[in-house]
View 1 (cartoon, rainbow, N blue to C red):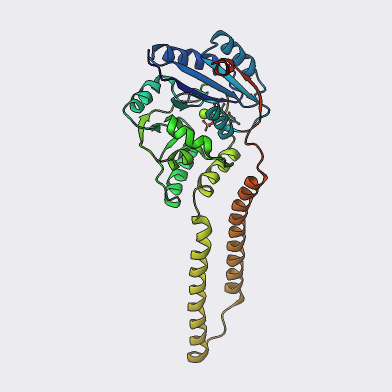
View 2: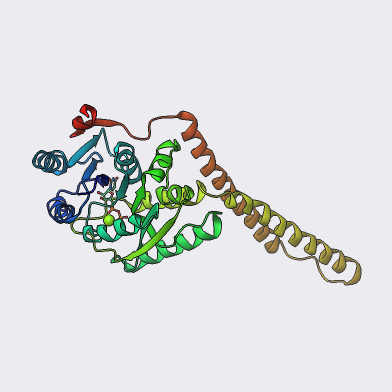
Length: 316
Ligand code: UDP
Ligand code: MG
């Protein structure tokens, strides 16, 4: 038996139908491994049977399983952050609780970590999701890569193992509106990816709504990049040079031709265009301003209602 403990963090929101099978498969993997584990479930304000099931799993596996119940539903990234901050292992594994992240792939992640990589993330080879969602993800990762300065892996989400070095850095980052794959990449160290097929959701509907996914995608860009702000400059320059060309053309028609003056429709189109562009960039300013406002308010990122199974840590 190795001495280094590994923590597994799983955010859970209304996953009563997935939890029994998830635990069965995870438990089998843990029992096969040479490492001692702590498994931290973060119950993100579930209102189905999730909490009872977690109590039960914890009760039967005290010493390995711990769970934190948040005071309400805060969100996927918040629940993950809470789990990371409660974890004590020499490495922390992040995975979803709906069985899209295959428990049987954990030994592969761990083996790479043992080779000396501080971060090993899963590269999704096959998303079993509706094709529009797959395209949207793919487009987002590629757009993001163009906009941010640090290099993040394409098609890698939260499923990963991180060394304590990386986890300590994440714990020290106090920012809200967190995009964990971005912050994980930001820490640096030796990072690598391994291909792991992404399974289908075991039961129920996705718990991260499309609106929340959109917000996360925005965080993934706005919290990592100034490029959207700079776009205003570039576009402004382009439009200004365009108007200069138009002015030259107007002078030419006035002095060298006898054509009638151009119609009002082109004028109106120009006005609408500029108006639209201004609104878009006001919106972009708003995105940054809202995020700054969140930081200034300094509210907690999540609120814990209850922690179960952490007692031994305090005793030792
Ligand atoms: N989840 C959570 N809080 C939420 C939404 C989701 O803790 O507000 C959990 C959920 O139970 C699952 C994981 O986060 O374990 C990923 O959620 P989901 O499968 O809905 O996301 P997707 O796979 O569609 O990105
Ligand atoms: Mg899922």
